[in-house]
Image (cartoon, rainbow, N blue to C red; front, side, top):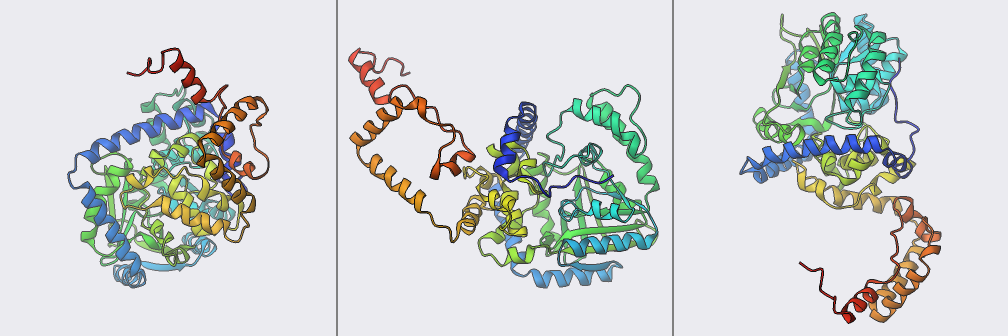
Length: 481
């Protein structure tokens, strides 16, 4: 059963138009993101040195990126010395081929997976299926997405767009096709749903001989990889199988073990709103008689080197996938993750996807404009990625070479009107008189603007006329408090 794919999805303006019309989706998103925002705010306020931690995280990431070649070579040496094997993948095709070959070499036809953005990025599940290999997602939210033949829409909670009634229905209808079926009479109580997932996955963990994971961090000096999670499914995947294959973006490095201290404080608070993650699993190569006896690390480029070459855009590679920018973004809260047409949604996706894939396609061209530039994403980012700065930078790339003639003329006309109070008042009166003839979608240069915005309602009369009448009647300041 193949996984859904973002390929062929519409560009953001069209996708967002459909998403914002879905009242249930907006309710689910508003409730979930609001809850996570609140928890994050509480635990961040507990730390007097949060600003210093944030600056330390930014500096560590920038230093690593400046010397990435050196740290990658050091990581390869450390992993190899610890009994692991390192593979280099320049793009998604090469990464898929490597993982598929490694799984086939074991003779197995099933693998269990830890939630991994990198494997979603390269659409690994579909590649494995094409070779007759079934990949089972074990993260609860990823399981929901997989069973429902859906797409993830959030870093932390891939099924954030689903409510518990929808999840219960997916479990009842689909679990039996993938393994242990849902209990008879399963409802929508969260505890019952979690227990159904445990029963369904337990046998998968015990039977699996091969696991595929990503990593939150890779430590260059020790060759250690780190996965932080909240359910324990990751630890089951990382310790029980005989073979472990980890697909990791080359930007996930930290130089030394001591550097983890900063990120082990930043990530859980920004991501789950917790002081520390319930499960922090670290593995270093192979240990005889303990855990997987064969370990492969696939280091993924897939556009990251090109991103690193961009002096403004490279800061996107600092991202530690916490999802704080998604939870604060007013655009994401109304559209959800699917509208971004990429495995990386929200503000960080709007700058990361166009850099990894280029700005030639319609989806990638639209993403830098999927923002109000309010700056909230920058304020909450634990590694201080200036997302608005990169968005503007990418917008310049998208429009580079285009003739802005009509737009330039419209801006000049607006400047002339706004410079003179009498001209402005006359324009306001004319607009009020013609309010019934104003279309919801403007023609000509205004068309692009109204592709993603509604034309504001024009009042029956200008505010100045209304205020002047109230002042004559002696009611000018009546409603002020």
